[in-house]
Image (cartoon, rainbow, N blue to C red):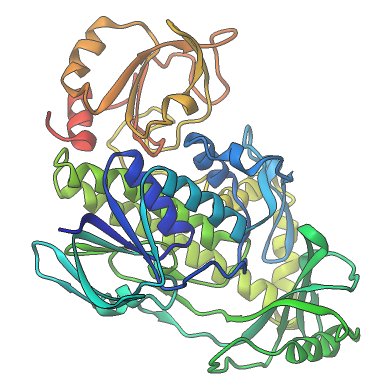
Amino acid sequence: MDAPVIVVGAGPAGLMLAGELRVAGVPVIVLERLERRTGESRGLGFTTRTMETFDQRGLLARFGDIERSTLGHFGGLPLDFGVLDGACQAAKTVPQSVTETHLEVWAADLGADIRRGHEVLSVHDDGEGVDVEVRGPRGTHTLRASWLVGCDGGRSTVRKAAGFDFPGTAATMEMFLADIKGIELKPRMIGETLPGGMVMVGPLPGGTTRIVVCERGTPPQRRDGPPSFDEVAAAWQRLTGDDISAAEPVWVSAFGDAARQVTEYRRGRVLLAGDAAHIHLPAGGQGMNTGIQDAFNLGWKLASVVQERAPLSLLDTYHTERHAVGRRLLMNTRAQGLLFLSGAEVQPLRDSLKELMAYEDVARHLAAMVTGLEISYEVGRGTHPLLGRRMPHLELTGPDGPTSSTELLRPARGVLLDLADNPRLRRRAAAWAERVDTVTARPAGDGTAADVPHDTTALLIRPDGYVAWAAPGSHHDLPMALDRWFGTP
């Protein structure tokens, strides 16, 4: 074996996965077709859930001062994410290239073997491992790994080579994206619907402006490269009446509204994450964030299986949990596309939804959907409100002084949080000490926390931050939960 795991694609999902595997001590090779980063950034910023994920691994500090905001939209209708109680604000205007750079440095510092200029040609899973034919700087060669993960984007070579089914709908229109300099445009941060289509304008660092142009009635084209800026400027003028042809194009791209999702996230020893598993209209920047969360869910599970600390059935939960998330992602982005990109015929629907969004429950529901804060996994029956949900940030006081739930999860291990100084609880978990950190602590301050019920005595938290067991309130016994998520010791 050349490595236990080979990851194809050095985008956000692939790099996040590589870092997670290395935190767990698993050697990983990352194969990336491009010899160097393009500097192009389809995604901007990251959602609340990704902010929490980065913070949990100590990555957030690498980004320095981040512009944060609670302002968002659903299908072009303004939406204040501040309706979500206690939610941290989302990051704005952080180019995807910056996010990728920080993730690559993090993964490389942890020891990930990142090989640029290596293109995957074919994949063969023989049931015992996966052979990957690669064309690199020194010619064609074959690598072998126990597991292969395709994080290689919407046109994934791994997905095609491994025979994944990828049903859905083809693109019905073509849209332009361009980063430009040398011209001032009025901000249209959440987009503006015009008689002929939609335009969006937002500032980027360094005096750059991002524009998006969607002209209705423009069918998708087969292109060998990006569109010319002349095409973009002409479409902009037809929609707005303004001439932007004198602007300096930094980057130009085209995209469509195709919506597809693989039927399974794992076939044998090959898995998919990010855009390789699901493509959709880029509404609200959800794609990159969902891909990062795919990797965060998969990393600790794959590491546990590689290290023979958990059965193969643990990997089944990756598909079960994340396929459902991807399905809702496609649902909400398609709904937003209909609202945002259709003509006057849907204006009554826009007006009706705008009225409904004035109700806090509706606004809360939509905000939770597009930020990922609604996500809940099936971890076993029970009544505790945190079961299956992500552990909120909780300031704690323990024997060694102040800490927090976020800090306790930094090593990417399970955490059994004993909030009642219960020796019997600790004895019952002792057999899992190599896999789960048992920490006795209490909430800091007045002993209460906004998102943790006051009568909570213990919480079992998975390495990805989701609560797998709680007392009181879980119907499963603690050893059953430990065995399910961390294997038989």
